[in-house]
Length: 140
Image (cartoon, rainbow, N blue to C red; front, side, top):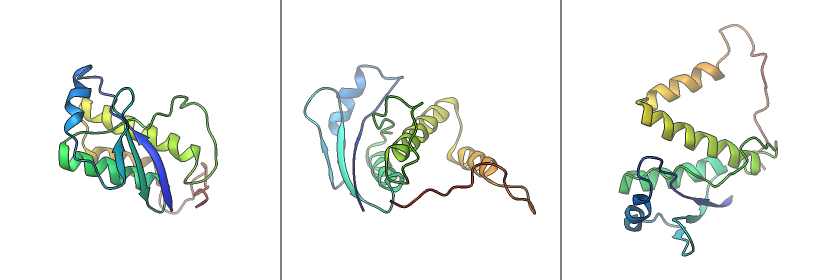
């Protein structure tokens, strides 16, 4: 499935410097820098889910340039739509995860710490079934 999204860097640490640094980003295939306003990377990526597509681009930019593009531009994070793994709800989840990873790293958490946390909160105790939300989302 083809996914279209826009990424940027919400860099609370660098402030105005971030737009200068971002001019040197080696762009992943399917992405282009948007000419208007602050730095935005517009991307079209092929992946099974939006989360996977965003992860591919963010990972590629981070690996090649050391930059963590942590903003998908979702402004009203409190709004929700259970519209499957590729809709607005997926954009909101991706935005929240990007912000969480970025801010956790600022505090000193590692990727292993975050994975351990996610596994802890998504795993039911042995021999029992979770009483929380069970939906795995739709693949539309």
